[in-house]
Length: 164
Image 1 (cartoon, rainbow, N blue to C red):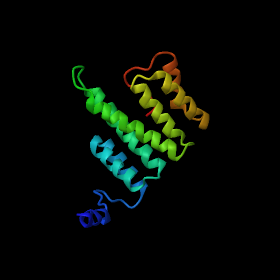
Image 2: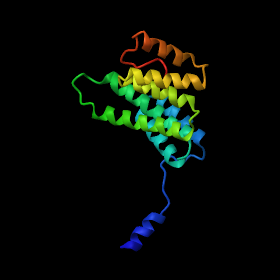
Image 3: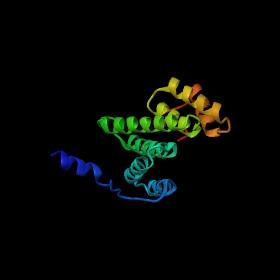
Image 4: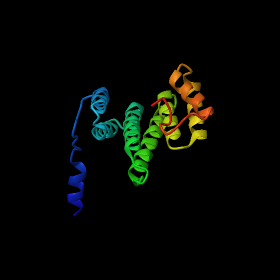
């Protein structure tokens, strides 16, 4: 039985998309997402994160795809619908953004996106803290500044913020 497990462990991992570069994955995910195929865009970025596990950009791209899918789900969800799927998307997006930050602590876009997710999930104090960190790393982010101002003035609604 151990020989069978060893053989399985040695088998190469197959990929559905199998693009050569991370940029190819990101561009394809963006195109698919713009076409409204958000679940497939998430799948592309999940594969990218598996292919490039040390890449902060891959983690951030996965988080963004998940965040867009979450926003789309929330925009069409009826009040009575079960939230388990949205919670799973939110948790996976949170993990992806955290993974990007762990891989590159100076990756201000990952902080900005995490702040948007937190605002969307009803955690305004934490969102403000994360957006402030993003701005400390790169003050030239007008969308993040606007989102932070909206949050502080109490104008952030269900959409979370302008910055995605």
